[in-house]
Length: 192
Image (cartoon, rainbow, N blue to C red):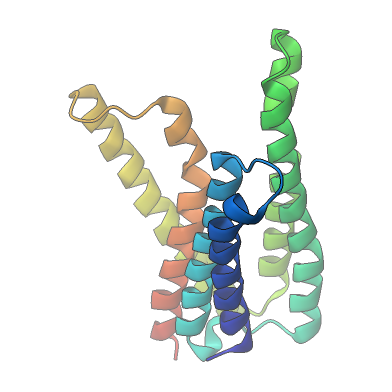
């Protein structure tokens, strides 16, 4: 099992442990949001660990220097996203003015832009085979999420399901990321 997969699975176990123990051991009240955040990180780490474990060898042909640059750009952007998301949610509970609420609601968006920039730079700088793998994987992911989203829209119009639009919109990007990870495994296996 690759080292990164083991690290992610260990992080998942640690986050679940913190989510379970923290409400009982903390001298301060722990909200359901904090526990949910820890469970969410655990689920992401677990999913990422499983993906990394199942990734075929030619799935990432970037040089160590390129991967290092990618991580130096991507990880701080994602940390900034998490921090600005919590700050945005916390401030939105305390602000009533519509213009300021709009700015606060969009506070996490630049961090996602920085993460996307890191991804695009990485894809641009890898070799042609890796670019082809990435292109096919992201194409499958976008197609799958688009089909799912439109199917959900038809079910919503038929009053079969009732998902608030804000919830549906928030989940588009994470669904593309998860679908991309799964599609990359399938696509990369074709090039083994």
